[in-house]
Image 1 (spheres, rainbow, N blue to C red):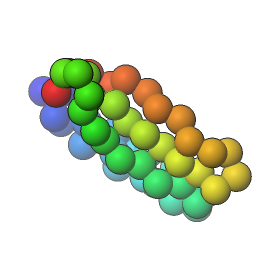
Image 2: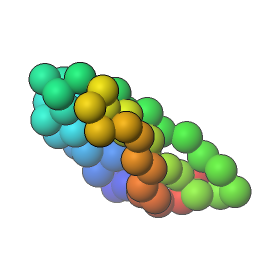
Image 3: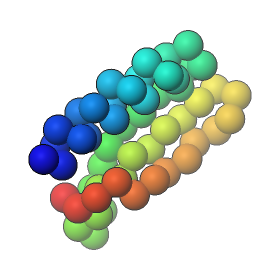
Image 4: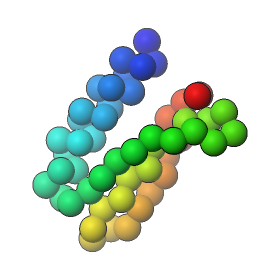
Length: 52
């Protein structure tokens, strides 16, 4: 179920940020999954999204 949510978030985030010059990627660290978003005008942010 969480993978379905992750795929939906990627689609929504990609559509919302593509025009703003942003890129998104996921990574795992210490058993926690993070979403890293970097935008040209705003810099980068990292958000916890679940477990790896």
